Length: 416
Image (tube, rainbow, N blue to C red; front, side, top):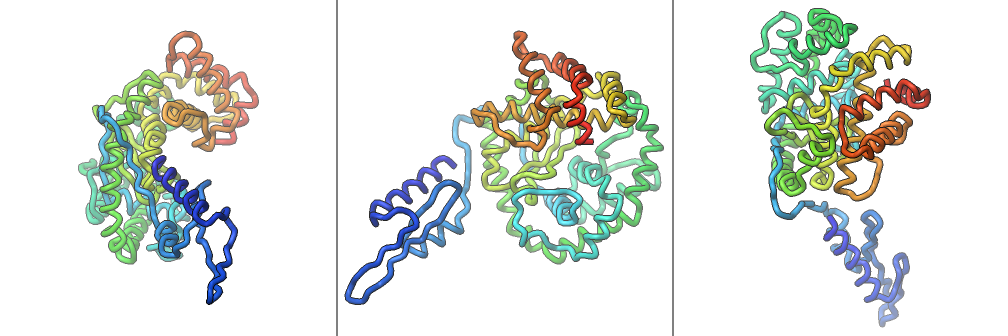
């Protein structure tokens, strides 16, 4: 990106020197046939390119930069894969306003009629979209038919008590049991399945399968013929970027903890061009953004989504402290409070990793300007100043200070 910006700036300066004009002026050329000589000004961020050729201006206007990271590849434990299943599901969820995105072209947000979108939006999928999307992410489903088959199996698991074969639930019975022991308000596994049956009814899952088929037939099949190759090419550049930059290693060094899995698998998703409801699933899979500039921000995606996977065990180890804080907030849903705390902590981890690459503090998450985040940042610095950072020390101190700070508790409560 830096070289492209420099080239653009040089183009602007060269044009100004040639004409003797500054941007925005027009020259009148007096020739035997008086003519108007115009310059075409194309702005890209803070830079302006002044061009005398309409053809060149159109070419620059339509150009999309191809960004790559060059350097000595030292390797990182991250692999990238591109699948239709994750992409079309996220597309349907975003178009139906069950998830959200940034920077996705409005003209591409189609494939479903209004009735289908409203039906999905008013269903229990609003509360369980992550469970479905993460279950798909953990699967080996790639094609549309494999995705539809997986959703049929998910219905059988939830409603008929079938044992999963292709599906790996985003929250398995074993993991649920460990979590509910620490947070009894979650109830039993059978009670949890009852909530899933209510929110992901047979009608809701059938509506989702129908919406996926409708989107594929009306739009996505033809669109994917082109976009799949572009995402595959982007995935190769992302792999090159992480091998040079080593963001997973930077994350692990920042928190002093290691991802339990041998490698992290990342899946670029078309609808998440510059951000939005990007998600992950334990133990080692995440989605990531897919703009042409993604190689410059992949460290942010990994710091946040893999950050959840790396630090997530704290919720079980410190459940007593979370319940005390939940009680101070007047909340009975301590696990939800724990998730809100973790989102603030992971946003802080994201900031710390980004500092290593960007070189200065910048806001890349919505929580970075509230009081609960500011408190976490202060506690982190204090722990760090004691001569070596310990995540356990940090989280213990942060939970205690949260209980004491009325301002931070109010900010946290607003996120619940």
